[in-house]
Image: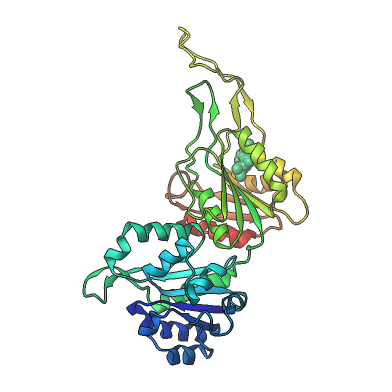
Length: 391
Ligand code: C5P
């Protein structure tokens, strides 16, 4: 990969040459860009020697357009250390030197930052707000770590170790940001089917799996249309994830069938109610005096089967299955019947998997007979595995 390492003016800048050396050793081509403050801590000669390329530190040195040629050159921009100053500048859209200008120009490709500052600066609401803003644009943060700080105190603010930062770069380079021109549809959460003006039929789905899928797709550079039933969850990557909040299966059906034709694929993880009350009273139903009550239910549309029938050449469709017996045989049958490419079988037999929790364990079956079984992992890791297997 072609990596630009941006260095800003914190004491951790003395570790930047080591980081550059690790990246070069791993086979990457590296160019450095530094702020004036960074040059107080590390010299031009050191950075040019370890990167084997001229340093970019003066916005106007070669005609004032180097930030554009450099952003075209780089596959990834890594800022280490990233001070409160550069974080605040990017969050506010300020471009007043070589590195901040490059950061604003560098869009559509991965950016990683390794923040480093005093622990009280890190905890300041302004810094935390700026970090949240950068994350919402898809910028990844590595660290900061907790430990001894240069100012003599201990706390959160140390730059992550060069090895940790280099490992995060490897993570991205192996995944290759391969979905950056694609749009994916994800459904998540439960559906609520109204009985009257204050009651509904619902289920225990939290939406966590679908939200993790949307975030993991966005991490790979995809644009995501996330159609979710009622949940309290929110997405952090608001730049790449477009969220559509719906309530009932029919609303989810309308949104999903409208969005699917523009998408490269869809992963349907929502727990959609199979049935809904035949009628919804527009007032609160009263006790009718008798001991029992009868509720007529009618079938909801099957979103997954409908997308299966709409699917065009080149589109991928992934469904979920939650079975209690004959799990794999039933899932395989569902895959064929609904014209899916993959089906993700949730294992309810394992503790820690399924509704509400942060972990899951799945078996992914493909149309062409492949089978991938996961251990118990976080839903984020499960999402990464599903995406790796199905995209
Ligand atoms: O057939 P079953 O409901 O078990 O299939 C589960 C899969 O189908 C899940 O991917 C779920 O999101 C999807 N589904 C759907 N529309 C329905 C019911 C289920 O998209 N009405």
